[in-house]
Structure formats: structure tokens, C-alpha cells
Length: 506
Ligand SMILES: [Zn+2]
Image 1: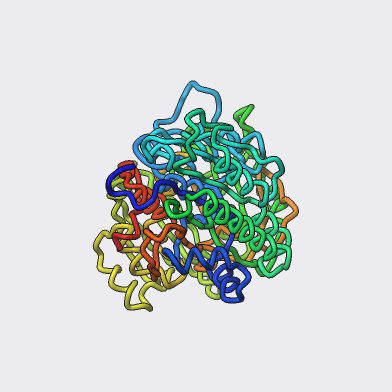
Image 2: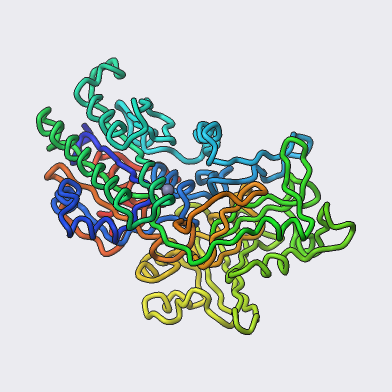
């Protein structure tokens, strides 16, 4: 046990798709007594800001590594989204065509650990010597993964309990795991299908609490409770969209054909909830297009007539924001353009984000041309950041954690730096849901997550258990702080790639 450690073991439970205010409301209603006890006796934050876009992958993977998407040849996870086109920088010419990764498919989910960049580390790889356990944790590099007997919340958490009771089942040295990560997907499934107010969704969170109660009971019986920290977090919040719209016929009408990676043909690939991620070929599919190429695009199904893709995407109902990168960007330095359309006048206002540096050293500047899209000017705490100077993630978090689009000026370049990111991102900010992926509109519900609004970006952050954990309530933090805080409790130092920081340093 390292000299500075406050605990010997940590157990991190990631409950998919739980908005902070919803969880803490359930605590107030006394429906989650076990989570409540952990929060009251330990560290608790009702305002933990997740990554943008607020989608399971990257948000979940970012929690497990304490970092973000990034330019993965140098830093970051390399996972920009749950759906992406596998382009590289420099482009891998002469190789086969870039793949499409779609984490909605089971076979693709298993490739996560290999998609993951070499310049970041899971909590297991950062925690020194010991046994490491994953229970349905998809990002499990450096740990032993136990598959659940059933894919239920109870079974996934029961797995953790069983290994603590009898570690020699999987660990020959018979020691309990130093780090355990369990992932609960069922809550997300119910949120999409039924919504965040539905009794079945709420009941699933209650089931989580009951299973956590059983883990606490077991830890007490076995004498581990006083030396264990239990972390509870979610990957993102959620929202209900106002309107659903089938966009598939529009792309057909424009002559835009779906990219087929086996053949290397096609005009575009997109996934589009309320935020749309559009990929187009440059001189071929290995290359990202230039702005000029995007303005003079010739779709396969349109004869020879040119299409301005920016104008084409602005015509999609409800689109309010558009992002794209400058042609001269490098991983070290660059510009992201962000534009907003006034729905009444149709007028487009332009702003830019400048970035420099990597990982925790990234600095970003938000330059407003005429209209501040994020309304940062309206609040004293965020307005001070509009000083034409570059700021780091902690400054953005401090200034914008209470309003919509928290920390987004920091997050956008971390996404666009990744060569696997899209070429044009658009958003209806939750007004429309399209449920579009790989050339098709899928059956979808109005309940989703992906946007930069506070309700989709704010999750609970709780660490409790051992009485050695100081009792603290934080007014804000970020999801990438979870891993460095747990490592701090274990007396271990985070990997250089970690962007989050121990909450004891706030
Ligand atoms: Zn999720």
C-alpha cells in the first residue's frame, strides 16, 4: 500500500444516461438510500460536466481514461464518437478504404480496446501493481473482464460482489481487485425507449442502488469497507426532442450516396440525432475535403452539377449551428469555424475557436465576430473568458459550468483534432431528432443525448465508502476528474495524458 493512500481498493460504477438533477431528485425522495449514504459521507457533486458530444462513446471511454478524443498519434482516446470513419493523419494512401466504426453493432463494440490510442491509459494501466476487474466494462485494457451471467443491472453488480467474496476464482494471488469498473447499460436503453420520467427507467436506477447496497453490505462483512472507495458516475444526461423528421429522402433528392467502405465508393457518411456528423471524401476517402471541395462537391447521383454542401446542410429543418475545420489546421494549432443561423432572418453569423497544444496543455480562444452563439456574454463568469486570450479547460469549466454549452470551446477542438472526426457538424440543439445512420432513418424515439445543453451535459459525481475519504460537496467538476481522484485516493499518480485532475486540487 503506497504511503499516501487513503484507500486500498476502488470500485467505479458507470450508470449510463443519468442526468445529475434526476439522480439527486431521487435521492431527495429517499429512493436511493445507498447512493445517498455514499454521497453524504464522501465526495458529491451535482454539477459534473461531461464531454461534448454528449454521446456514450466518447463520454464513457473518457471517464475510464481521464482524457478526451484528441489527436491520438500524440494524445487522447482516438474515439471521437460511437460512429466514425477511420481516417488517419497522414492519410493511409495505398491502403484499403477507411472503415466505418458503428458501435451500435455488437461486433464493433468488441473492437473498442484496439481502437483506443496507445497514448492514453485506462485506470487499470495507471493504478500500479494489483488485480484489476471489469464487469461488463467495454474499455477494459489492463483488467480481467468477467462477462455477466445475465445482461441485467443486478447480474453485472453481482459479478463484482462474487469476485470480492472469492477472488481466487480469477486472481491466482487471491487478492481482491485494487480497481474495479462496472458498466450499467440498461438505464440508457430504457431512457431511449421510454424516457427519463418513465417508471421503468426510474426503477432501473433504484435496482442499481439496491445492488450497490448489497456490495456495501458484502464489503462490511468481509472487512473491506473501511479501505474501499466507491465511485458513481454517468456518461451523459439527456433531453426530449420536440420533433422527429425523416431526412433520408432529402439526401436522395440531392444525389448524395452512402459511402461503402468495402468498395471505397459513395459521397458521404453521416450519423445524425439532433447533432449531425457528416463525412465527405477529399481527393479520395482517405483525405478530408478542403473547404473549396465542400463548396463544389459533385454527388454521384446528380449528373455533373456541383453542390455546395454547407448550403445543403443549412437547409435541413431546425439546423441552428454548424462547425467545420480550417484547411490549414495541424494537430498542434488551428481554427474551428462555428456558425449560427438566425431562424427568422436566415442570416448566418460566424465565430471562431482557435486552439493550440495538446491534452492538459491545450489552450483555446473564442473569438466572436458579431453574435455570441453560446450566450457567454450574458453571464459575468463566462464573459471574462471573452478577453481575446487563450484559456485552458479548467478556466472554461470554471466560467461556464452553470450555463448551457458548458466547456464547449475546449471540447470542440479536442473532437476536430482527431482524424477520425467528421468534416461538418451541425446541430438543431434538441429541436429535431433525425435518428439517421449509415444511409437510413432508424426507428427512433424523442428521447436522446448528444447536444451541448446543460441537461445533456451534466451528470452526478459521487465517491463514498471509507471514512478516510473527506466529506466534500463540490459546486462543479468534470467527468475526467473521476480517474485522477480515485488514483489520488489509492496514492497513485495519473498518466501524463490525463486531462482531468483530482477534485482535492479544486
Ligand atoms: Zn450513454
